[in-house]
Amino acid sequence: MGDVHPEHAQLQADRIYLGWQYALLHPDPGPPPKRPAREDLKLPEVDPEWIRKEKLQEDLLNRPVRLFRTFMASLAAVIALLGLAGLLDWSFVAIGLVAAGGVAGICSYAIRQGNRAVRLRVQERQARTDRDRARREREIAAAQLEHAEQYRDWAERKSLFDKQLSWYAVAVPDEIDRVDVAGGTLPGWSALITLIGATRLYSGGHLTVLDLSEGAIAKDLIELAKRGGDDPLVWVLPSDLPKLDLGATLKPEAFADVLAHVVSVSEETSRDIGFDNAILERVLEVLGETATISQVTAALRALAQVGDPRDDLRFGLLTATQLERIGTLFGRGVADRVVIERAWALESQLRKLETLGTEAVRLPPARLRVVSMDRQAGVFGNRVLGTYVATALTHILRQSPASERPWYHTIIVAGADKLRGDVLDRLMDACETSQTGLVLTYRSLTATVRERLGRGHAAVAFMRLGNAEDARVASEHVGTEHRLELAQLTESVSSAVNGGGGGYTSTVGASRTESEPKDRGDLRAGITESTEWGRNAGTVTEGVMHRSREFLVEPHQLQQLPTTSVIVTHATADGREVRLADANPAILTFPKTTLQEVRAIRPAAGPPPPVEVLDEDAPPPNLGPPPPRLDWRKPGR
Image (cartoon, rainbow, N blue to C red):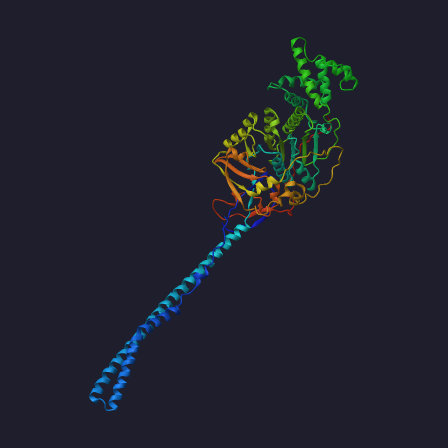
């Protein structure tokens, strides 16, 4: 694959980003190729010591011959002197000179031949050395040329490796309309919701968070939204129940259905809520379309014959005409006794909602709305409140026209395992028909959750599963044959950041006026300065950007997943697709993060497309007119 040049891009308004996948498309080329060793670059030469030894050896061999030649030359001289002195006959002198001179000549010839043989050996050695030197010079030149080519190739691969992007977006496919998040810790949920919410709000969408986790997991998201120019609405229940006007626009039939589901939370076993719904519908017919919860409970007390109805008349909760009609709603006898018992049970549960909307004020529209449960309140009370909010949202969605932009409005329910299965089913169906995005997070995989996990057009995101049985179920759902790559950065950041914690601060305490839209701000700077993930990411990234390990999807691995790890899986025509992502929102601020997915960057064939990175200076996308927003309150109730 050739070099990849990043291009500026915007967050896509119809995309939900669940995290970032770590992948290196160019492998590490390793150390640079070694240069030829100095010893390998030496050229052969004739050893002067060898020449000296050859000459010395020849001298040693010629020494006796020289001595003998000297002796014969001396003998010839003596013979000549004797002849001159007349001591020898000249015939003998001639014979002696010839003999002695011949022997001396032979010795000289032998010495010359020995010296010539030495010179020839030296010349032959020098010629052979010259040939070896020329061959070695060619080998050295070839080695240096090969090293230069290897180094250029290594430098090119090293440049690609150093410049390549390492974090790719993991987005929800177009055909998916719901994400089920199974498992996870509060810090992990905080990271995931911050990432989903930040990219949703920044691209112009709307977000509603129903936080049943009691862990303030959207706290970073709220701070980020404020810095980006939004003015989030935050309700902390039950203290903000009087200021919550959710459900004020519902018609009596829908309002009765909501209240019947709220009461069903207290039932130990699943029962038909149709009877309760019928009682509440008849009561609301008497009270009218503007009835409040307090009026409903007063009517139920009158129906159940509990307390003195004159008190409710005095407080203005009921009129005399309404009280009379309530007394004749049902007949007498056995059936009446059943109605009385159910009316008493309904009143005892709905009393927890009596303050709902009693102090509601007109609030400007907000792109981020958070409804949370105070951990100081009772567990059962929070389940009642959570069920009311979820069911009321369901009916509002059912009454809303379908959006032309999927995921434009997204609802996140954190701790959805605290809701009954039928409440979840109705919410899922309403989101599907209204084209509203839905993200459900479950702390544990109960039987109710398992039945609904990934059902329909839904993706499943598995996070850390502490329970062994939950981990086993998750591994079977994903498939243990999948091998995933985990970045060292994910483990380092997860262990360094707590995330979540603390509590929410209500923002609906007083009436607020609508203001002009503010500048959306710099998303990267917002994440860095407003979230714990952004503030801590820079302290642990040194030296861990290119280290990773692989693991198989097995139960014990799922129990040890880092806090922000998310295994995203969904069914496709070609089988189940499985990807490992890091939900840490701070990764968006890294220079080597792209908004494209790995499968778009690494196609099966053809040149790679340009890589898109977030462009903070680009104008907001032209999304056209927004879909109708969900109105929580209108004049009436």
